[in-house]
Image (cartoon, rainbow, N blue to C red; front, side, top):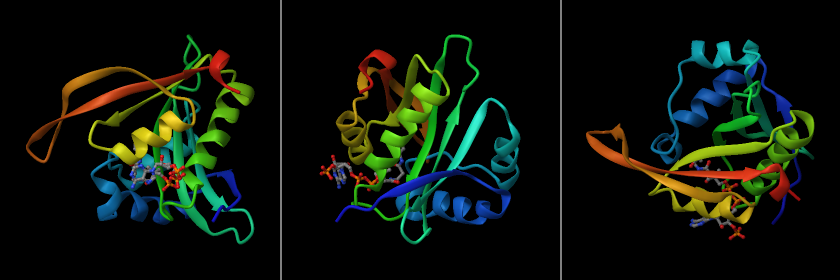
Length: 162
Ligand SMILES: CC(C)(COP(=O)(O)OP(=O)(O)OC[C@H]1O[C@@H](n2cnc3c(N)ncnc32)[C@H](O)[C@@H]1OP(=O)(O)O)[C@@H](O)C(=O)NCCC(=O)NCCS
């Protein structure tokens, strides 16, 4: 099954959905946790853009995505966070295509990059499928629940974006 999606700027009244999604057991081990205040601040931070992913036909909220460093002087934008609540329907792939278009066309990025925990094979495969290239590994870079987790750095350049 394939669902069309839209991305719209997150509003403060959407943040309950965002925080709930971020804290769910199936997501919280793979993404950082922000407080309500941190998400709220991101909505008005000119260096960040915060989007809700919705199903195009019903308007149902099915995820969110945050871009960071959108004003970076080297035009290197960071895909800071992605969560999809209805998994396995191709929503993540479509959201990433939409985010690439926003980054490269709207925000004039030269490079769009991210980090992903090395044990997050679902996200890693998805990023590869939509054109991100693994650039390196940050070994044992993040202390998580008493264990040092490693992260891949992945990026796509404007010249690689189709
Ligand atoms: C990672 C995430 C965003 C993927 O969203 P999604 O909408 O389920 O992804 P899609 O349905 O578009 O799947 C696309 C691809 O992901 C990969 N994928 C999906 N499920 C997978 C699984 N169980 N194992 C391995 N790869 C998988 C496949 O390559 C899949 O392609 P295919 O459908 O052609 O097989 C979602 O699972 C999520 O929110 N996870 C928790 C938070 C997270 O990890 N965020 C990313 C942090 S860097």
